[in-house]
Amino acid sequence: MTDSGGPVPLPAVPVLEVGGSHVTAAAVDLDRARIADGTRRRLPLTSAIEPEDFLAALAEAANGVLSTTALGARALGGTWGIAVPGPFDYARGIARYQGVGKFASMDGLALGRLLTTRLNRRPDRLRFLNDASAFALGAWHTAHASRRLVAVTLGTGVGSAFLDRGTIVEDDPRVPPEGRVDLLTVDGRPLEDTVSTRAMTARYTKRTGRPVDGLRELTALAADDVIARDVITSALRALGGALAPWLTAFEADTVAFGGSITAAWPLIGPPLTAGLTQHNPRLQRLALSVHDDGEDKALLGAAVFAVRGA
Image (cartoon, rainbow, N blue to C red):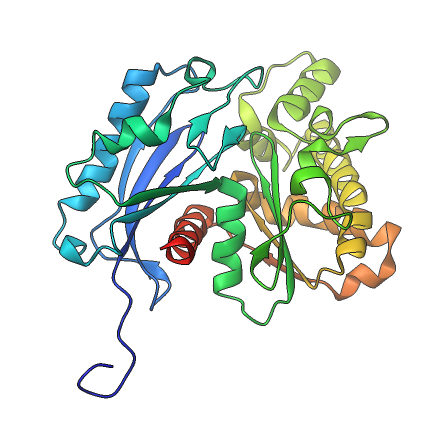
């Protein structure tokens, strides 16, 4: 107890969030569910980055946080939460990026062991988790009324996590294999052949003969371009249809959406929800939350995960 009789405040929790184009390090104030002031460090990454440069970027971001007085000696036992995209051996801290079109040179990299030696203050432990799971835990941490929350991240591909009372569910007949929506199919083909940056931009180019640089440009075109709008709405409606039976089986009460494309929610939201409710009208009662601060939620979730393992 503190002198005032209140609970002892949690110390700042150091975290890393690795995306396809960046790494962000920060200290998270779990009492306030926010990033501690002045601790965020963000550096660019590329999908073709070499291991030494990758490790150097992560270490530079992390050491920048360690040098801040806001973190200081109050770090939670030196336990870091680190959110990284799959495929990844999260228990052993080893990258498994093979045949996924990103970070190919990192396949087999013992990230946990090699990053530990590059930190200015040796951690007690590094706890790795999937980036979509981190986003889900962050969303759940700020919405405790949710009993069963499903998180879906939309960007380069589709990420997902299923939480039952804040516990990640992966091996259960109520959820897709490994809790991964990207392993589902649409019309017998992998989901991401329909719903991904690659699929949607390729479909637009095939129909118009014009190349498009990512989803940001495609969603911008959709304001005046009927083909761009049709490509996006048909893909998101298909995603809703693929999600619907699993949300029903899991008895989800909340779905949290994140990722870069959520900035275009007025465009993507209606076909997505239409795809959900077309297959099960009862899903109209779902609480839908949209988080354009997905990075903050992932950092928060990584901190929650670190605390659980400390």
